[in-house]
Picture 1 (spheres, rainbow, N blue to C red):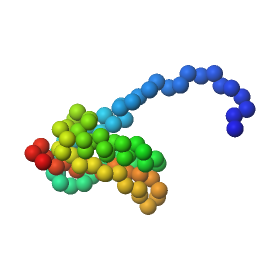
Picture 2 (picture 1 turned 120 degrees about the horizontal axis):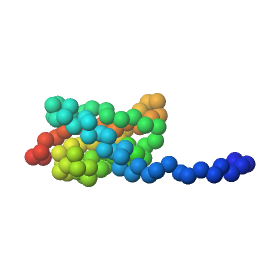
Picture 3 (picture 1 turned 90 degrees about the vertical axis):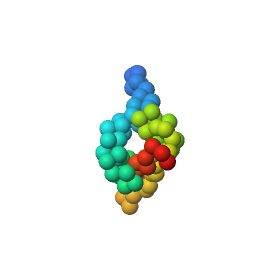
Length: 92
């Protein structure tokens, strides 16, 4: 429990910035269609699951249109959560 007040502004909101960083992997994924690649690993499940859904639905422009990529989040043995992505192709 905090016993003092710290007067400080919260950090700037970076909504969506985290997801956009995955765009750097697109070229590599397209060179190996149908093969899964782990592109991220975080302590919390939420961000990995949210990002997987957004990628599958094509909600991130660089991963669109929907159906071009598949993505899943999985809990690892060490308790962290990973994001796996594979390129399906544009005609799927």
